Amino acid sequence: MRIIGVLLAFWVCSVQSESLTSYITSRNDLIEEEYRESLAGKVTLNSYEQQADIIFNKMMQYELQVMGDNFPPAINFFTSKGFIDNSSVIFPLLQRMPKGAVQHVHFDSSGSYGWLVSNATYNPYCYMYTGQTTKVGNDTLFQGSLQFFTSPPSSEWVSVPKLRATSGDNSAFDAALLKNLTLEGRDVGDYYQLWTSFDRVFGLVAGVLNYVEVAWGYFEHVFTEMLMDGVLRLEMRASPSFAMYDLEGNTYNEYYFLDMVQTLVTQAQKINPSFSVGLIMAVGRHQPKEVIFNAMNTSLHLINQYPDLIMGFDIDGPEDEGYPLLYFIDQFLAIQNMSANFKYGLPFYFHAGETILSNNTNLYDAVLLKSVRIGHGLQLAKHPVLMDIVSSTPVAIEVCPISNQILHFFDDMRTHPAMEYFQRGFPISVNPDDPAIYGYGGVSYDYYYATLGWTLDIAGLKQLCLNSLTYSTFPNSTIEMQTFNEWNLLWNDWIQNIIKG
Image (cartoon, rainbow, N blue to C red):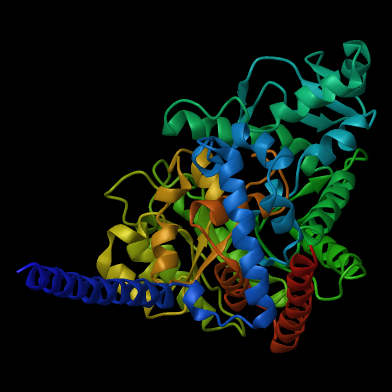
């Protein structure tokens, strides 16, 4: 009986062992199948990349141990930035990573405002408005606004160099001035209060960015900063009627601005010949219909005069406050009909789905109007039919992790819908949106949030970088091929540097 009992126990253990083995095999197969469906699964790593991936994963594990419960992508960026700068082992690696392209950034907040503080505000003709915030025509004059004058219009405008001199501490003054040009400490309140604080910053810097001498310097700074952060292709939203001024009373129109951008791109190409820039003309969605149509009409003519620079048109600003895309449908259809009479039409690159409202309909119109890409697309996951349509078309989603967190769409990157898009293999790209207002430049911080929040490996990072290039709008195939070739060289160097340590 004892022998039979032992044999029975052995048989039971054998069956359980075989069942467990089969279960584990099925489980691993399921995980592998899901991985193959993700963006990371679209990449086949070479032997060097596989070595780098092992090292990278170990660094990720160490990073997670160091941070403990203080997970940066789940903490307000203004709070977590100190840890990222001073303690992260992953972030310096991501800074050196060749990013490919930035597809979503607004031109007047595309480069860190530290340059403005260190340069523009030291000009003896730079003044700050110290009076109370007030309406001037259709515009708002905010307390703290900066502008250039040979002679200020009132005593409420005070020389910034003099304010700095009387402060007794230039460094502290500059730090306070820079903080005033970001959302740090003001990213509180409800959705509408946040956007009010957000728009305020644009009002503070408009008078200095429109000063022609500063504009030249600032956009040179933007291009250099992006290049140093591994960006080869920069696609910015910009105003189709951007005008500048100087102290002699001269004004400079959009043609001057576009020529200036082309000159600065040529200058930046001395750093890297593969660098290029494209512009998406954009205006605010709170504008009347005739203003939107006129802006599109201007943009249509500009794209035919600057086809290697202008890419298309967008409407930006808070979706839950401004007009929906459907409100302008007559204007959109009219401009599409007009495009038939031009060599180059006016493609759309719409912001859509950047909303907290479940009844926002902008994604429907973005899809039907054949938007080349979709800006943000946060609510796309709630529209299964639209998900199917987008997945079957070459429409990329421009994801902006840090912007979405600071503007309180999602507090934790682990709950960001882009993680689902990534897992489903949707073509998404990583972008900074308005980095200057969030206190940084480039796009490395956004990649850091995405990497930790979505648990990315080398394959996932590579595919995100490739997406940024694949879904960019290059002016011709020659520039596109040159950019891809340069990126591949830089990527391979980056991989070798990881291996070498």
